[in-house]
Length: 357
Image (cartoon, rainbow, N blue to C red; front, side, top):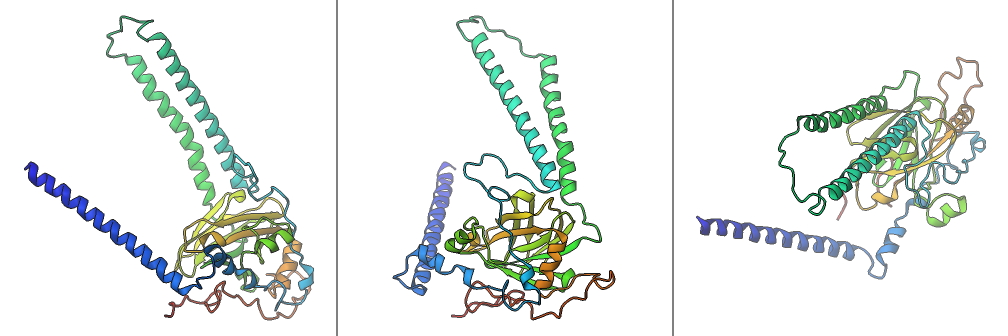
């Protein structure tokens, strides 16, 4: 039986080594194929930058409706809605859910600190009081009902105290938006974002990452700045829907405490409420391919009147404008022509195609 067990273990080792070798050779083959398809004289880092999609979409200034000059991109506030150097805590929050979650986060940090301090003090007390020198004759007590009750009940009460606000936060995060919420749809593509506005004429804005030079020229953080932001009104509920055209992406903005997966064939929905105007940055937070790290998110929250002006500048329409006696919307010019970040790839809204040989 021992011999059979040894043989069985040997077979497992051999199978594991064979599988590891197959994976290694497969990875080398894939890299060799990519190297063959890419000019050898171009370093890998330059290849990534060469694929930078900044030049793929200049739709914010071309092919838009009358009144395009009414919109000027907002200048971001340093440290607001973005990561900061040397930051140790979560980003400052600018949404009601963010404030609620941050309060719970701070409370849990204090709970952890108090428990850690208590355990450390108890540990030091036991070392000093019950070492061999101070206590040469150890106690032979095997049970203490009071202590056993305490170390069972107290942790249970602590967990209960944490569970109540946690469940409340979870419920608040997925509260349905009101009927009059403005609908915005974030669509994930490989590797950029598209933003559709069903309530404002159903036009779509394509968002690609800027190069470092362009981001620096605009005074925005590199690898977070985009050519066309997702523009929304501040101070009103937004019905943010997410989906994807190819693989799973994730729409995440830390300073708004917002994260929602974008899944092909599925429409996810959650309410977004931004307290005040500003520019808020995020990134795709689901591994989605080679350029996963190059599809940032930039949300620009504007006062409602400026948001309406931006909608008209994009050739969209304002819901209920004519009923309220407002000036009729301008004749809509062709909507922004969404382009893919990859040359020859399908545009935004189009189904992905299989790569050609």
